[in-house]
Amino acid sequence: MVIAPEQFHIVLDAGHGGFDNGACVAGISEANINFQIVKALERELLNCGCAVSLTRVDSESLNSPYAKNKKVDDMAKRREKIRNLNPDLVISIHQNAFSLTSVNGLQCFYANETTGSQAYADAVQNQFNQSGLPIYKKVKPTDFNLVEHSPCPAILIECGFLTNPKERKLLQTAAYQQILAYNIAIAVITEHQRQNT
Ligand SMILES: [Zn+2]
View 1 (tube, protein in one colour):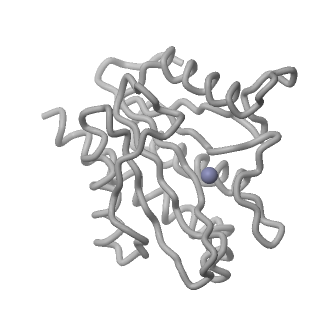
View 2: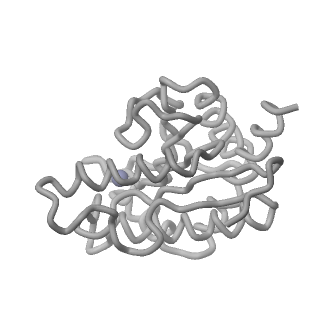
């Protein structure tokens, strides 16, 4: 892939995959939904002229099958891929789970070590607020594994709760995945323009 210097280059990370299903509720695996939302977001960003790369490109994780600790190896490989791609932004997509089934909505986390990350997290949550989409709690800093010492801004989006029956159903539909993708894309592109003009 050739990336023009003026292009906004984003790495999309579908959380979990392969040996790791992530949260699993009523037979629905987080890893699958994460990947479906990443593909919808990829289409949306490409349509807007962004350059997009993916950490995992299918249902498989990135670890070696012989790794002693598959999770550690998977995350190390994702970090390595991100370092080599050297993007302007990393977006990691996840789904939440909680013991209370009434809890729902989106929450963004940002890499607290990298300047500019919080603005992207804020932009996404503001966009969801404006669109009347459910928000769980306000943005939070994190040193999440994937972007430890991240070379670029990075956010992790917990799109919704698999433990909420209504939201679990919505998260599986192409229509709602598209709504999520559209709102995330608009937010990060606008924020990127704001930071770079
Ligand atoms: Zn997850």
